[in-house]
Amino acid sequence: MLPNVEVPPRRPVAALIETVRRLTSASERAEHAALKEEQRIRADLLDLPVGWFVLHATDISTFPELDADADHVAVGPGGVFLIYLEHHLGAKVWISEHRLTIDGRDSDRLARVRTEARRSSGQLTTAIGCNVTAQAVLVLIGAPTMQMLSRPAEVHVRDQHDLRDWLCRQPPRLDRDAVSALREHLPAPERTAEHMVTGSVK
Image 1 (tube, rainbow, N blue to C red):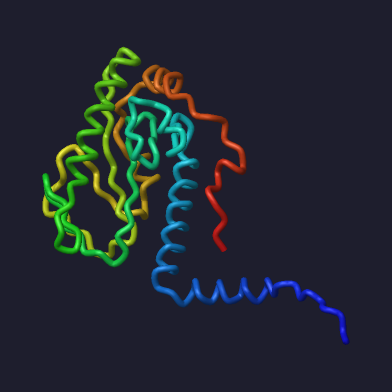
Image 2 (image 1 turned 135 degrees about the vertical axis):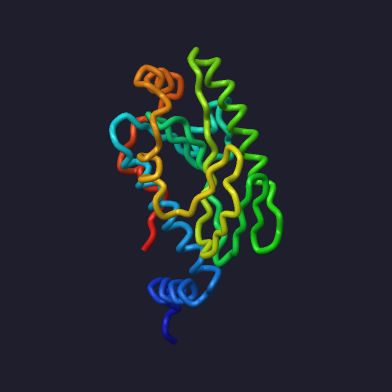
């Protein structure tokens, strides 16, 4: 009788099956694409010119002046921007001054992020002793149709394509001393190669 031999699991085959499943599932493909977009946006923000600095979600949560739900906070000559990323693959979006409608359903996100930006404005102004206006930026990823009926009050609604360039085009709102004071009050940790990537996507 032949001795019992334990056959090791066929890991390459299992990995291949998982890859095929991911590529053939619409939801898996959408999740994969969404992660790649988030990583690209993060890389773009890290590439902002000298004079800007960026906090990411894990950093933001340590500062009570900022909204813990924000994905990024960018600070520079153009001001303070609380950036929120939302995925709406294939959605039809209508935007007006006080209303955001996604596939026919009203969203309360405009009011929510507007309130948080106002709160951050007041607390940061108090903290550094000069006027700071924090602005909310709602980035809708994957929405092919965005109808801007009128500009939202105090909230910027954008797609994912030109966020970095848009920030760079903002008119000056903070002088160098104010940006330095904010950098000192909201110190960002030193970035290493590991910090700059949130996960690998192949």
